[in-house]
Each structure stands twice: as structure tokens, then as C-alpha cells.
Length: 324
Length: 305
Image (cartoon, rainbow over all chains, first blue to last red; front, side, top):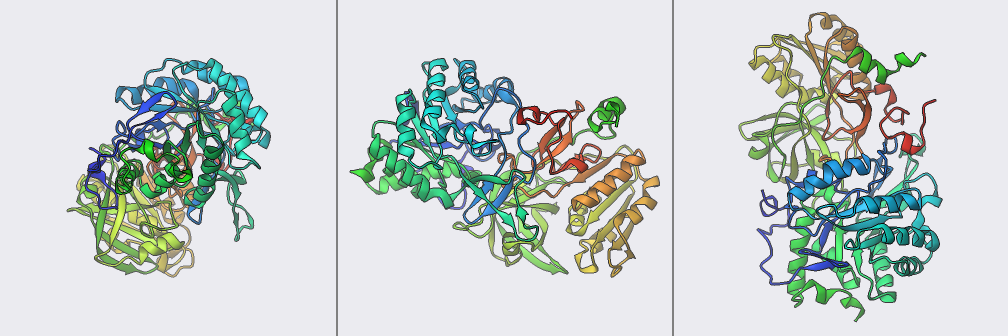
């Protein structure tokens, strides 16, 4: 089954006819499409196989892996909000062993590119994960999740502090496979995202993933208590798109040579186009996958068409166009 | 409490009555389908969908997930609804208008189209050879048992049904089930239909003759039915109604503490590892908590007391 056959609700009948060159890069790694999954929104890719040709998308950005198996938080873990949702999963996962023995081989056997998100509570955890992912077949690079809001303390959100963020990124860069680009995933919940971006870039990040969720809260008016088991959760979906786009814009303006993987509420090709015009050289589609499991392939097609309609012959030409 | 009385360790030492429900044979599809029938039934709305590729794949116990509100809807999350029947290219579901998304679904008219993904989840496992089956439905959960009742009768199994609800207008699919099952008992909390009381009133009477129990409905009912079946040494399978964001296994929001084949408890997804679980594998008392013996709880800082 191909993505074409599972076309969603936009009426397009197949891959776009436009001659737009959709190839892009994640640091040094070339990918055939600028549209990727988003970490935490497509598990390890397997579940999307009935809906999307996983080999045709930019990459599967995997759910963040930690060293040890992790149960995640108690339920309820989700609350729907206007044009979005709060999640409070708490990084549930089987740990690096499960990733290496189960998930990554499954992806590699099918020729699916993976961009592995790593998470931890200590700098050494991140470095060990990067080390263990050296040379693993199918792995294009690493996304360093220093910005998950669903952790025990704000002190664990490394991306809220330029020094802590830099420590993690430099340790990962030193430990990682030299062929693996290292992207730092940043939080919008900071006073000045440009200073964090500059710090991790100086620390060796090959690129930036922007943005993670925003910390949010919903209270049930009937029980008069927070809905989520974890009390607070991460806000995602189209509701955060203007915030995400602003972050990409500011960072690209300040650091035009640092590649950006843009994300935050992308639902359509025109949404993705905004991120490209603001400075992203690739994008991740996250929460929209919950609404439309074929969203990643659909957004690729819609973005290709939108670029062609505007006279671009490649996605690369459009990166940062809004600044020019 | 002694160490050996802990549920997870009991699972290893005593063994359970059920095996985890196997995966469905076929993968789901995403299709835009037409509403070809709409029928208000008391407090619910039954929608009939022309969905041949879903119908041919569906097995009793599975569900579908609808996008709601149209392409630009501010309601992003899919609504997971149990399949009532799937035959001759047609899928029927019973929708209860609870919030804005499900209300939107109940307002669909014949000729409207819906973006639907399915069939999803694991179907009800088959019964032991020759077993008499007891099917228990709470509220609109009874709709999910109609296709199962048809299959069991076709396979020659005697079928008893208990349908319960808060009140008569919250009962569901009773007429259909009367046409299929050997016996149908009805209970309501307020006595407005059938016997006044909870489903367990009738379940307790029917359990001694049952070889397997299947249930779908709200969590407290599932817990009571599963516990009663287990106490009688009868395997039970429950289809849970957890709220889900995606329905396909990627969001990790719909997890429950489930005892696995190895006796260890994991937070398992209701969508892809359920919605059908062995009734003795669901740790009902621990839903909404993080017990220390869930795999990976130690990494969350939860340690054995």
C-alpha cells in the first residue's frame, strides 16, 4: 500500500506533478523529503505503515529513548484543547536496549531512515545513548530532547538554561558517531530562545529542532481538579503554530547558517511552507498525525504543490525566503 | 500483606485464566466513507456507513476512529467508537453524544461523508470449544457485542446476554440481541426497564453455566464482571472504553496497567494492545495510578514500598 492510495481528505490523487526538488539535508545527511514525523507523535513509525510509505518521508523521528525502560506517568495523560491538546506521557518507553533490538532493525530492514530522539536526566545519560547509537544501520542522526516538559522538575528541562543545554549538546557531539548530525530540540518556554540556540550551536549542535511543547494546564470544572495525572502537560497542535513560527523566525534571523527542523502545529502544506519561509530546511508533523495518520505524506505533497505554485524549483530556494 | 499476595506475583505463581488477545489479522485502512443510514435510538444515534474495506477486515471487538468537525476543525483528536456490526460492505456504530466531537458525529446525516480509520484494535478471542458464552454490555457498550453474538451463534455456541444501563433510554441494541442470543436479561439502575439493579445481579445467576464471559461498558462494570468471572474460574475478556487521541498506537495516552504473558505489569495501549484485554489481566484497582511494579516505574522514581 502506498501513501497515494491512502490519500486523506484533500482530493489530491497522487504525488505532486510539480518539478520542485524536495531534497534537503539534516546537517550532513541528505533526505528526499523535507517532511518528517515528530518525536513522540508517531511512536517508532511502525503504526503508520498502513497509512504512509515510510521510505518516502524525510525520516521517522523516533519517540525519545532513555537508557532504561520507563513506565511514563499515570493516566489521564491527555486533554483536548482548542486546536490542540495537552499530553502528559512522561517519556514512556522500553529504553535503548528495546530500541536497538526491536525498533531500529525493523525500520532499517525496510529502508526507513530514522532520526533518533534521545533523552535523559543527566549529561552522561545523553552521552551514553549517543555512544550506543554509533554506526547503527538506518540511523541518520540524533535529536537531543533537552526540552520535554513532562519531567519531575524544571531543573531537568536543560533547554531552559543555556549552560545546561550546552553541556548536554557538547557531550553528545563528542560521543556521537561523527557521521550523525546532532540536533538540539529547544523549548519555547524561555525568555530568549535565541540565546539558547546560540549556546547549543556554539557547543556543537549541527542543527536545531524547534519547538517542543509549551507547558500547560487544564482543570476539569466538574471535579475542580487538574485533568492530567501529571497535573501539567505539554501543549501541542495548531494552537502553538504562531509561537513555533516566531521561534524559527527569530533564530534563523540571528543564526542564518544553523539548520532548523521546524515543528509546532503543522497540519497542511501551507503550514509547512510558513516554517520553510521562516527559515526551516525541514519540518516535522506531530499532533496532526493523531488527526490524520497519513498527514506526513499529505503535507509533503501539499508543500511540493505550494512551492511549485509560487515559482520555486526547490525547497532549498524557499528556506528563509520571508527574511529576504 | 505478604509479598506473595501481590497481584503481579500472583500472576506468576497462580497463573491467569486468559491469554492476551492476539492481534487482528489485517491492518487498518483510512477511508472517506458515506453515511447511508442514521437512526436515533433512545439516547443514542446509530450511524450506518458504506465502508466495504473496513467491513471486510473487521472482527468483533474492534473499533473505528473518526475525525470530527471537518478539515479545519479545532477538535483534532479522533473519536474511537466500537464497531457494532460489519457485514455486506456496511459498518454500523452507535454514538453517544457526550461532548462536542461525539455530538457532531450524531448530527451527521445520510449522504454526509466521514474520515474514518479502521478496523482498529484486537478482536475478542474465540471461546473454548463448546463453551456457553455470557455477553455483558453496559449502556452503549452492548452495541459492541452484537457482531460477537452473531459470530458465536453461527459457530454453535449458546449465548446469554445481560444488558444494563442507568435507565431504559440508556440501554442499547437490546432488540438486536434478543434476535440473536438464547437469552437476554436486562437490568437498569432505576428499574425503568428489566430488573432494578446492576448487571451483576443477572451475571451472578448466569455465571455458573458460562464457559467464557465477554463484556463491554464502563470501567466499574467491567471490573465487577471480570472479578465475578475470575472468582468462578471462568475466563473473561473485556473491551475497554478509554479515551484515545489517535486510536492507532502512536500517542501513548490510552494506557492501562495490564499483566502481560510474563506476569509483569506494563502500561499497555488500549488501542493496539486492547481494547480487548483478559479480564484478569487488567489491574482495575490501579487504573489512574503508577504502581511500583509496573515495568519502568523505577525510572520514574517510584520504588517498592
